[in-house]
Length: 70
Image (cartoon, rainbow, N blue to C red; front, side):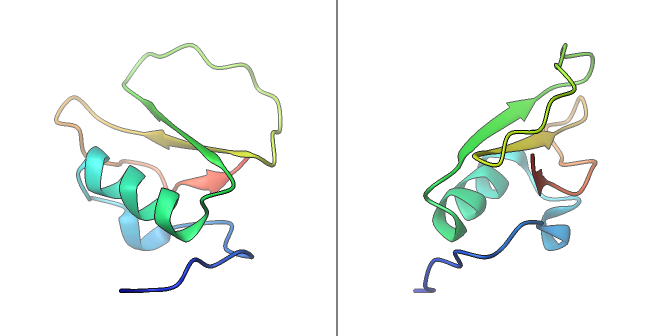
């Protein structure tokens, strides 16, 4: 079992991973942030929120952008 990583701010290793395990990994690494899984075409407000990670996925539920804090 790994230890949460408080300073982690991006997850390039999750590119190409299914949405559910990706969101779980982020929540494990940073339990202090909320994880939003967003399918194609989801409306987003272009604001910065240091307590949020958006996970953008394709139509097959595969992460298609590197998840980052914000």
